[in-house]
Image (cartoon, one colour):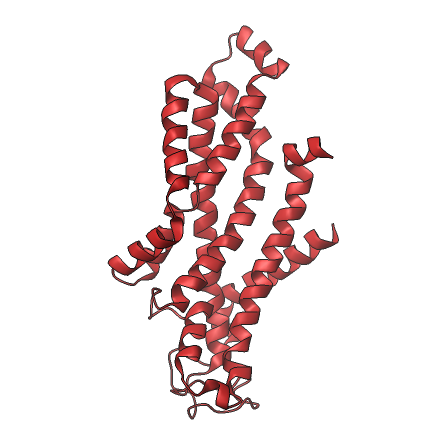
Length: 271
């Protein structure tokens, strides 16, 4: 439970920073607020980058893109993966075979090269990044939800409801969704961490939106400066976004694992 509370606290703090970014950031992330590569001082808490933009302001506004990327991956995993897995497990038959063969084929495709290909083919924008994350976020959740639905279908109360004349829509709303909601929430939190990391990776290699300040884009520009390790600039330009990405992913992972231990039926049976 300590890991769960610590993870939730960090996520909540990052969420507050993203919401109140215009109030917390002393400068616009795009404005030239000082001299290039200015060391941290009372005005620029984390100094400036090579063109004089305030790094602390970029860090604050960058939290918005990271959370948005994580939310996009979570929505894709929950809506697409949950819907397909529930349909395959509940209706069974030919629909189950077709959907699961499609999921198996999609899982067999190497995701990273295709993500890079799509991100490079379409114009670099935040919408392109979010679309790529959604497209590649749902397959694992579809298989997990299907297996859980197959188990729930055999429960006695489901059989009793069918014998009493309950329709399929009623069974889904009354029994399946309440049982699956904790598992879907757990997977959404874990997938959110994957989304944060994937967005940072795409931005880091130059496939993100150059007009949207993100932590990955900050890493890209910092490492693109050839002399960064010959100065002290890496301490306030390179390290902070890397630490923020690591801390947020760690918080999401802690939270997801703690929720999974509590609500994942497979882990419960193993214990």
